[in-house]
Image (cartoon, rainbow, N blue to C red):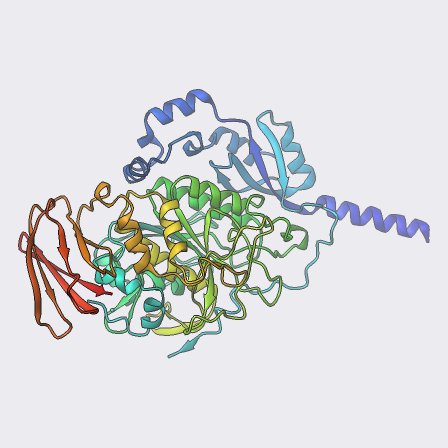
Length: 542
């Protein structure tokens, strides 16, 4: 009997030892000469758009932006039994699959400094009877923008994105990247006709299968993408219909593995090198096909997982990474990764009346950081599916892109402001900012209030290239008008809601204030005309 038990132990140990594992292989510091040459000529490692964004925001271009050593990567790839799944210049490593023995043998390569196995113990049971469908909530879909928002009205007005659009900010000139499992139909879907015709669909890439295709292994991305970019006149308008987009596939629908976190970080790095401002990730990771890889709550401290480390690096590089909190409140409970990262703007779900939705994962992260950051509609959220039909769906997967588009439209108003300033303005605009909770975070944001906040922050130092800006709004006594660089004078006309002219005044950059203290409280329309171009704005008099 003892002999049989011993044989069983030996067999199990051998099976565990021989079974393929996944790991992050860390490399020695990049060659100083290569780094110096790249930093002296940054256009060799990123686009001009990326350089411009970083210079405008004072974001450093440093050794993390330099690609990792491809010779070293090739040597790892050529090693016995090793498959390289992804690479990361920020983490200076490659993500691999192979047996424990083959992965450990990589330490014989002089440039490999450390190995981080996805299986943190290598002793827990490897078997998993089933993999939970992470899109279970989202897949419970039911058929059913100045913009006529149509079915998207409630989710847009809830966070006051219509105020941004009414004031001329719809994401124009802001680059946004989506990470998801696939976007089938995006090249023919009528909801993206404007995007395609105007050349604002800038590219797509599948990091899982290493092909230039938008299709991937699922259609989840087709729906999430619509909440920011979709436009069907009179039926549906996303929160950033004027932005430009990259579509990246980082989710492998054929299984659940930490490699997807590595694909995601690699896509984030690509986004940064392309000059992207905002990313949306309607994905999250905690439970995997192999239970030994599962993240514990202790792992979700915002610093430990590959996803969290990538999110923090992306934030440090100047982007705002908008991430779904997750739909696991009834299971694991807490926000997953990369939603746990301080460098993520994490979004939970509310219903049409701003009530917490039962499935929305809660906080804080295990280090005590408030998560989610803010909330948006995630129950019966309007979407456009892969076939161009307007329908509804559930999940923080939709709260996230609704917010990501809003962030892009907001940032358009002051693109030289840094990501931390924009993120804090969004948090401070939320209805629970002074009393955050584990379920709501800081609450539901007001992007109109956030706009007024960022325009007030050194507004004369942040003159907009293309738009007039009126602040404060709501106003009590005096409205100020910030001039774009192209305008030297203008005429301001104020109308009441009946269309009656209430006030008319010539303004200039030096005489840019108008006294409205005698006006009755209510809504007015301000019309500003300069160089034969007229723009209208909503004004609230308190």
